[in-house]
Amino acid sequence: MKMSNSLLAAALSAITNNKIATHDDNSKEKIGECIKYNNKSFLVGGKVYTSPRDGDIYVETLSGITVSLYVDFNDTLDQVKARIPIEGVSPDQTRFVLDDKQLEDERTLTDYDMQDNSTLQLVLKLRDDDSSDEIVALHFQSNHFAPKYDRDFTDVNDNGETFFMRGNFRYKRPCGWKRFAINVLDKYEDNIWLGADKSRQFPTSSVQDEWPVSYHGTAQHNCNSIARDGNFSCKKPLPFGYGFYSTPDIDVASKYAVKFTYEGDDYLVVFQNRVNPKNLIRIPNIETGIGEYWISPDGNNLRPYGICIKKLE
Image (tube, rainbow, N blue to C red; front, top):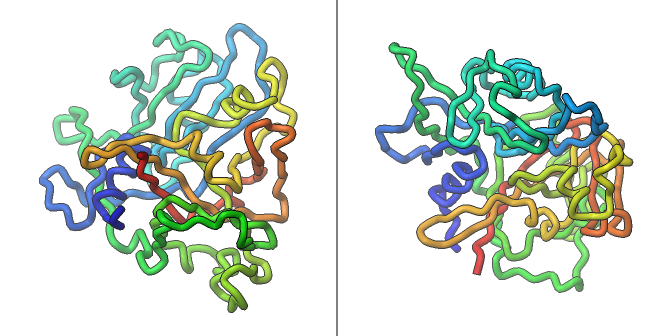
């Protein structure tokens, strides 16, 4: 599988529900606005309301992450939108879509007969001089990514024989996947969290104060899906409350990954992150029944730094 900007664009198109073009694509549909990343994983859990007017809905955000929100169905779509963190894009430049139909922000969820577990899509809305709606292509530029750190793990198999460590946690490398590196150097207060400011004694070793590696999928799944797939009960509040969910095992994350087609072949796409270990809550496989999960109470403590793509056989 070739490391390709067009393959990456196809993956980004799938997880953002928008047409994404490469920086060298001369399509007339392209606009000058570049794709932006939230750098957060909104896989959220918390109290489940029992009032008949309340329930949970899912919102697929611009970054491709699905947010679980507990709402009053008399809320307007504007009120729902206000609860979704959107970085780099004004809320009035976005719209909700349900079953390929654009929704009006001033209407309520009840107006659109939204039910418990319904899913909304949040997409970019660009208006021309006639104020008519038109969805056009976005494009990413080369400085959004760091090809120097791309890595092809397609034919790599650790076989459990070699243990890699990152942040003093075992690093399960994305064997069988290609990793496209996001340009995150010097985007935060330092690069220590990435292990980039210090010399690594061996490729398998950790450096002081770096953060461990986790993954999260990009499809319509969040901690409530984990609850349904694993041993958590959906009929009572989740035992670990609100948080940002990821996993150290890419095989677990792949169960919640977006599937997309590129040049006739099917692929999966997953985000690779670094997670602050200082406030990390670990949920072992024995409790979830589907694999180890990590919860970060604050989304700022989970930082995507790679996009992993796998070709399905």
